[in-house]
Image (cartoon, rainbow, N blue to C red; front, side, top):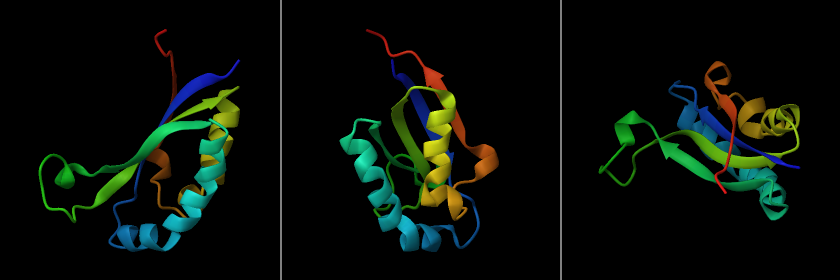
Length: 106
């Protein structure tokens, strides 16, 4: 039976982070597409950084990624994260990422 995990992946805070995201975003989305089609990734997307939170300019920068996923084990969920181009290219701030299991209320 699949377990539910929440992933929180803040981006690195280097000046190059937004240009790196722009360069590899299409590869990231292409990798997520089959996971979404199979129901592994059930919800998610980018989130704004603190400066972009709330009402603000339409060009406010994103601060990271969040998604909900289904996997049989924590190791399987982590493997999916580690295969993503945002992980392999260093866009996600790896020491700050969080992958947690949670119980979905029935």
